[in-house]
Length: 334
Image 1: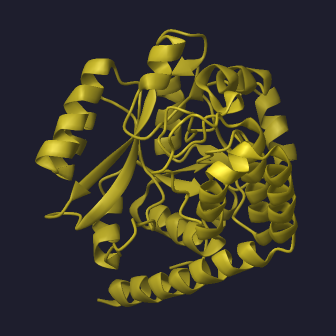
Image 2: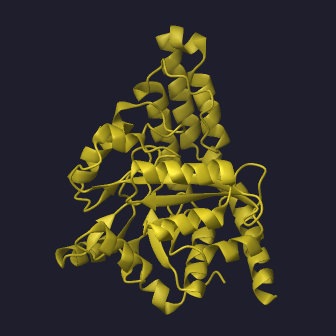
């Protein structure tokens, strides 16, 4: 199932080819971006909605959207009618009956009242089918985010992922997932005739490193073409080198750019080494001693640049990805 067909292989293009298409009027967007309004984004000025909005415009993004975790605060801050801004949110929904695990869904072009209704369905009803019925009834674009992701202590059943993929118009090719998982996502999209969107899912300001191209004068037209497979993606998968760069970015944000007075005890990246860095940086001793703070930062940079934390993280994820792929292949033979 992990092999791409020629049809899907042709949808993955280089930045150079993307530039040619944009000259012909194709539009681009990064459809999964987090700001400081998300609980797991460090409180740095560079990551606030206004800064990221200006950065996106400066990069020439045709549509700009922020998909913070279970909040539309970024759009309240910016205003809902800013140029090129498309409202968005990443909704968390745990459906124990149908899905059996927690999943994340990006929703676009919603209003405040839509967000409140969807929050009630997600948090009180825990009913994914009702959630999706609402999205379809109100014609809201939506994406199945990182289909093979799971929360800590949850492991989705392959059979559940297969039936869930059928419900979504577009599946996500996530820059922060390993190639094996993204290959499986492409195989799912091919099998069920779904669209593919490449996103950064950035929590550190790296928006636009990957993106999705489609035609459309409006966001609705653009997204509809993604649904129909009339689109291209400029992808990138998680590698050791990318993860080292990401870790160094976080160290810089943690020690240099984040606001020390904000309580982020619940902050978790899912990467143990980074979560440990956050805890270390928040210690009273480091905050009282600039010299020790600087020495600690230098030491963490040195450890990060050895590549060992990145290699260990990727090794653990590769083992899980291989296990998932085997289970999916078994499921397909049933």
